[in-house]
Length: 199
Image 1 (cartoon, rainbow, N blue to C red):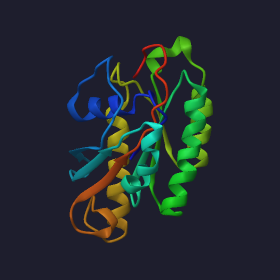
Image 2 (image 1 turned 90 degrees about the vertical axis):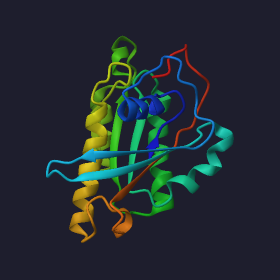
Image 3 (image 1 turned 135 degrees about the vertical axis):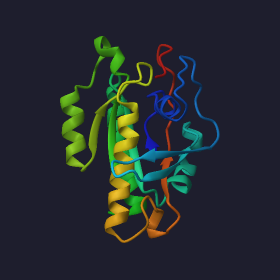
Image 4 (image 1 turned 60 degrees about the horizontal axis):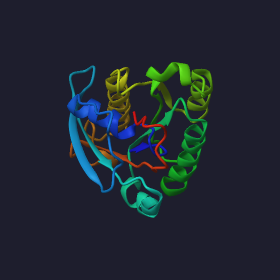
């Protein structure tokens, strides 16, 4: 799952990785969308990563847990130009843990819109420190510039493949099932658009 407050560019990150596409006019997600991609790992294994991109507006917030319950991984996205979006990431982590308990979920924190460095409000050091505190990997990303996008998803897939192999499941299997699929569900909460910047 990709978690992040509205207009942080989480859908743009996903579409950049899945389809290598980007649009400055990316509209907020208003319904659940399902995408899947085979992600190669170092040992040659292909992990099927299945992603739910859920509606993010506040009025849909109550539906979020339906989609991200029992998720194997979460990619937490914030906008480096928006301090509030970084604070919201911390709320998402608390909610995720309340719903899934202390399960060993593969986490990644993305400091997105790194192409807008001159407007930065959250330092990479702050993001890295928080990521470390929750056992997550940290990435400075830009969907627009295609910076570190693939690295995020490959890293999560590798961690999941390693986790499932260690638990005796098939590589990439969700919840120990031998389906070869991994659940990476996405949720986002859209706030008011900021100055036309979406990604």
